[in-house]
Length: 538
Image 1 (cartoon, rainbow, N blue to C red):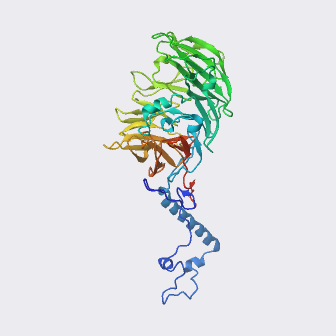
Image 2: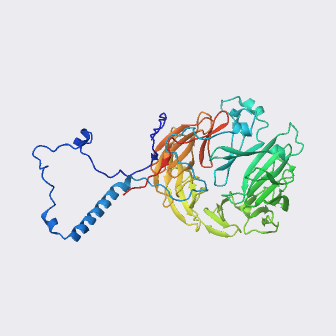
Image 3: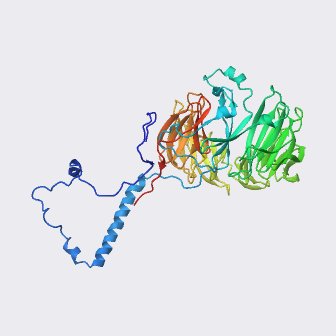
């Protein structure tokens, strides 16, 4: 294992072993080792010339069957003793499927930019200064595909930021599909092609991108694009990048709203200051057809769910079917749900002045209400709703099915608690301030009971980013001014494994760690040896 900050050393020609039981075999004495492993003659006077004794007299009197049974018993006792001695030191890693679908690479040794490369700046922003760019992405399914676009960004001293403002004026119109398995850019779509008669001075931009269809294998990509004073929706074939559907353009306003989830596409705008929002609902399979139009409230509270759109009106909340446009009253008032958190078939929000949280189903019917003592900031983890109460220094885990508090712990010092993409267990990751220098302590909590299983030391400003089965990762601030440094730690012990100083931007794309350099070229980071988790050999 490479120590943090130490220069990389070439690995030996074998896999990096996470844990391995010492191989059982003949043991050599100190005298034998000193003699190069050769047998050392016995001291003078030893009975080496006589044959070995066949055993004590009582053993020789036993029947062969008795001897065999006692031999087996001795082997069992020895195996139990060895197990008891070794298991406490054996690390424990998860065995569940990766959370949120995509597996994250396990890099147990300091990585190098020795994998594939992809010229993102050349493909997505030709002619623009690469130092002025960043590359946001959206995962596309579970096969390592990501949708990447270029966006202007501050450069924190790498270039003239004032110059970047003018040099990147036309940046943002292109989006490309990158395969993180080999670095191939499958296709590039330019939003300028979505608008007819777009003048040279009118910029075009991909405002947002999302997927349509099953999460693991979407059948379409949905882009919200803008050009000049117009906006429109465009659907692309993920395989070819070809435009397969689109909406009519509409005039862009500062109040535009947009949400998409599952088959629901919801757009809205406020015609005049202080007026009620006007909304349109479409089926994702037919962007050119508006199935429902209607008025909302002046505050513009709406929510797109996988199979329906919820629109808050002065008289209540409407549930709209995107396929038919049929509407009916929803079971509760959407505008009464403050900061709703959607998890599977539940919508969770604070219960109000009484304290606690309330969960309603997709029809608006109350499913459960927690104890009023459960207060704080909610987040969705793999097996429970996590509530972090910074004021009272308490972390609670609420069962998704019943609303019962599975466990609650005080004095964790946590400012945030979350699950991490790619994790193969139900652990929670609690970030807390560790010292006056701003350093952080990342406490890994067992999802079953909240017990602290390990503590990871992180620099100030670091955030946990993702985790593989045996390696967790956090992003810390680097020389780029952004979080371009990677800190890796062992998922069982919390021990720091390595620190990598990125060049401009580091990201996890499709479970692969990618470093984008100052020329806008993406590099896959790979370890000097593949990780091998060795099972015990008894």
